[in-house]
Length: 172
Image (cartoon, rainbow, N blue to C red; front, side, top):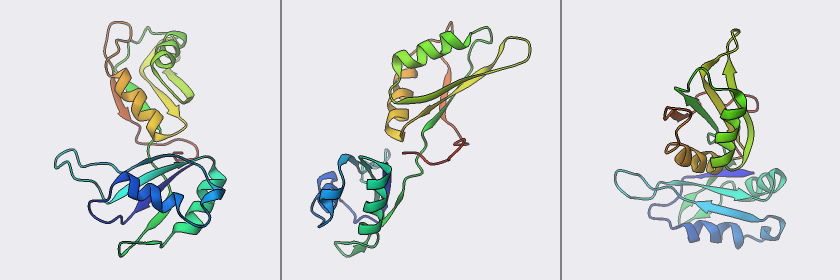
């Protein structure tokens, strides 16, 4: 239910993007859950794209139809389904760790979890890595930050966004 909004004007604030979505004539047909315009970690400047979380996939579709090409301060907005990453790779796990322990740790520190998988080998051990899939990028990011401080068994694992997004491939 998240949409990507591209070609934003320079120096756009979150509230300005929120206004585009809340003041549109069709705005009563969707619910905005969250708006974010990321900043460049090196310069601190806002990026020229953002994300808007809506109440449902149907609301996201309606938003895309209504706002694609919308003129904001001379910029024609691109509004597309978000393809942000919503799956984490959790590597460097102890090979003797059991699925139940892996799931318990991730669930204790995670939010919005849809699926967990500790990849096993045929000998009853795991291969030292697993995956966690979340309902959106924000949940994955929050969980990633929390898990980076957590010890799994005796190790602190490597946690990255997964290169492959698995079935569906789309976040949100």
